[in-house]
Image (cartoon, rainbow, N blue to C red; front, side, top):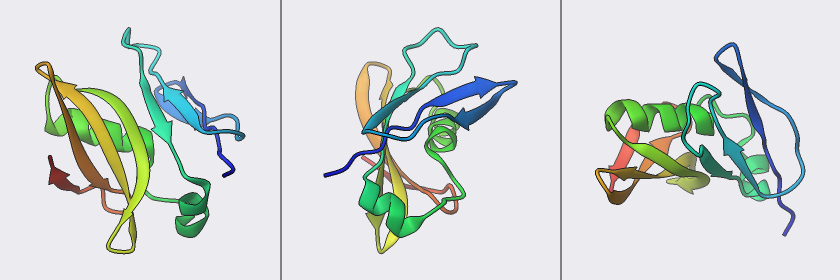
Length: 112
């Protein structure tokens, strides 16, 4: 399976994609001392859904806003009901949790 690596760099508060090539990327805001988070994108799903209004960094921000104190660990592109979603794993008060974020509307779809 071919994998694509996306690297995001923050410039003036805006994440810009840099490179394409293999599987995982780390998103990190230069104002944040945390380790960032991994982004996993299956190339077949990426090709199937094309550009999405809500990217992985935005999905992580939605989770952080919805769950104050959350530290996002990973955002993975997946599908639900034929549409793109981000499965976002995060830590909240020591517990690992996962939610699905609609990659079109930004709505939180599931809270596991």
